[in-house]
Length: 123
Image: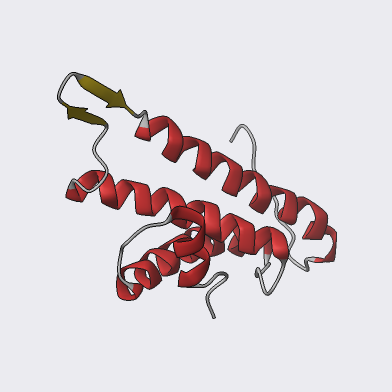
């Protein structure tokens, strides 16, 4: 089950990407979240922080895709007007916000996790 719906992404971004594309991007974002949760024996379930993290990560992936396919270039020029957008900073900021939410979820749920980790230092 996806942590968010494609309609969440359409409503948050106004993107014209298809449902199929958005669902693929959501699936990738959710795999990124699950990869962060797995070492702690956690799953996101229906938690609001994880849903928000999925939305932020998917928004970043939408921007990456749109930058790559040319539908969202970094600079637009029309006549003597030029508008620039720092897409890399936007993507980075969205990912940072998403992983802050995931890390907070891990911190607040780690005590209920049954996993124990031992780290070997210096040798």
